[in-house]
Length: 135
Image 1 (cartoon, rainbow, N blue to C red):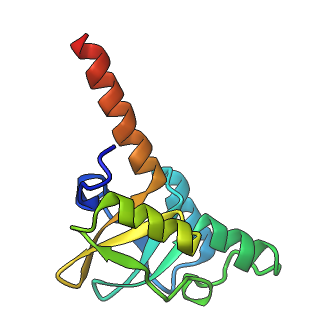
Image 2 (image 1 turned 30 degrees about the vertical axis):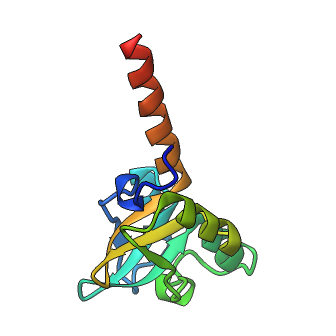
């Protein structure tokens, strides 16, 4: 992988989200349906929070909250995002420092995508497949 390439090369532009008043159960159903580990929380077309599998374990299961708990009660309201032109290496360094597995990507102050380590694995696999096909 090219560490100097902008993160927009690797990010996923399709954001999947839920509303703040949706239940944890509904959020989990969406995660299972799309086979993803995180969701954005969207209110009036604006991303206001982030919700991950880790949040479910730490903030729902361990404390014993019901799955009817609204997402807004357990989401992370602090959004950690980088500009779409930030180099991959810088994004990976920031993710390691913050101990996170997903990074929100923004352009002109608006969240436009998400990057996860699985995006990097997908890109690596494609590069390898292309190299093998070229042999």
